[in-house]
Image (cartoon, rainbow, N blue to C red; front, side, top):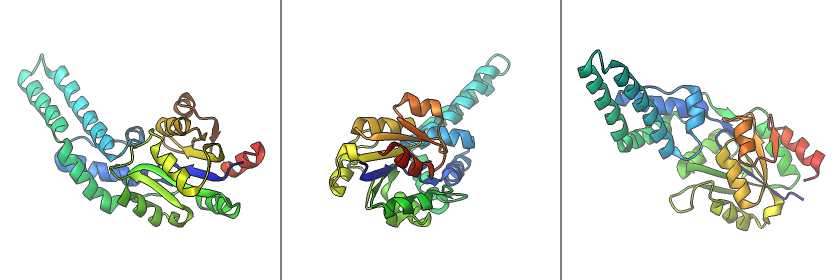
Length: 246
């Protein structure tokens, strides 16, 4: 019997794509690099803000290198200039990380909020006595702000985030810490997430894995990384629990 539900944050509990993209594009514009699209944002997040910054800068550098290659025959000087700009994009990592954290502090919930039906689903789980934890690679302060602003912080008895000590997902160390805090065994936990990293985390921890199709990644990625069940909206979790008696 399931006694606990562990949730990823971005793309699972909260549709935060607007705030994430807005924050990154403030950085890209300030440093003079290419903005990222919504689809790029969905692909680049999930492994912590540092990887998000790295992937965004790499995308800008790749565009510049591509332009340089096309210009090389007709305009060698322009090609060299574009290559230098690409190198600058990759070299701007530390500054971009610093600027991203500043931007995110202000814009983290732009056009963002809990997914439709999420609050009702969490309330039903609470009524059933199911303990809940949030397991995310987001930094601690940003995690708390996001959950509180979304109005769902109080549903979670335990939170694991990127505090610089606990290894980030897909390492299951944070999950084990949450298990210990909530007094549950691995076969009593259902884990919900929207990325391959989340599914790997669930598999590594020995949890029942549920892929959230309403999030940032697709069915193929979720299944390839170990999703046992898939749901198209938050409320389907309750039906899943009832139908499969898990």
